[in-house]
Image 1 (spheres, rainbow, N blue to C red):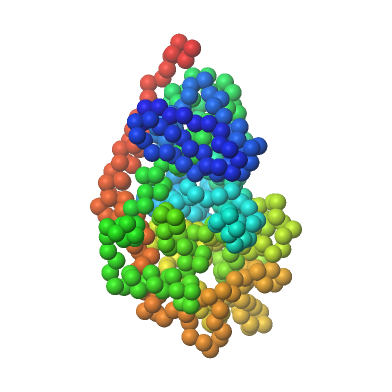
Image 2 (image 1 turned 135 degrees about the horizontal axis):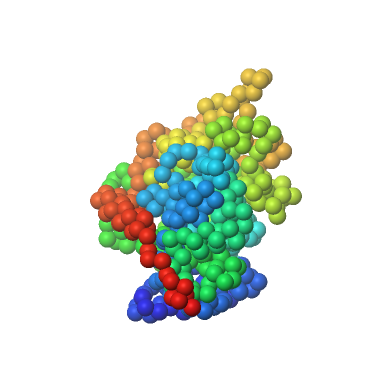
Length: 446
């Protein structure tokens, strides 16, 4: 990849960075409207190549100097060895200038987000007369970031995460950090003369890196091989897939489509939003205040839909790719293993005492993380359609079969021996990062 062109995308179209030498297109950065298009305008004195931005973005992603504490980077929470998700089972991660702050939500995986559309209240998979599935799209659990660069801005400036005071502070870290020379090489020796332009370059590099197919959407799982006719699933895994798809059993595919669409491999999300009535997680510090509730689409992080009562309690449906590697599940990290997650799906309304706390009156407080006035928003479609006394939609054996199928969604680079090879590569990059680059003389920058 020796050269690349990049330009303003049309409204609603993905940004594509086309490279010569037969390289793939780096695709699918959603642009909601023409007002956003100038972000992609060629405004640097050196035209950056896709290859250079990808490598720069990779290094910036792991650069802790970009945080106010100097101790956390994007990779701290979005670990490459865990599908760019958390490496631990904490419901929320420590952050802030002193690493004593915490956010409100579990860290999601950043893999397979390349086709996430901009947020809309009326999404149809087929724009030519498809069914309106309601609100969908956008990055983060509440969809408030339309593009990857919008999303990247959030943790950099969040008081509970990387905690920078403003974009200028981030640029100052970058200008005096270990990636400054590479940044100048990519965007031009004068890039730091304009703080806004430099911050744009940082966001763009992070965005382009997250469009790297090998890193973020490799489609190398055993299930992908099976869909391509180049691999097999054993009997248990095939039973699990059938249960996953069956509308009367798991009904998982209604939100996590598992089949090819127009020849494209599935990302296992419909990009929509759902209120599942997940139990309140007392391990989240914000929940020590009994009057606090994370309402997803209608706040508190998202500010533009606070008056839409029908959206309260809804969170975006995540991909299930690499889900077997996760140790926290749902937006609040309330569960820590897949078996318990699936049991919650099929037993929530059958055995509420097992999932929810009791009030002072001794009664079970179902949907206890959602105020009573919003509890009608909770999903009751299968498998949530069973009443007390009925059998759950999945038996214990069937749950094991579904989990076996979900294990086939793990990308090859995250399974032995590929994972060990990637760890060696990461250590080599880290060692190189710690080796100081020669400082440029003033004459080199003129």
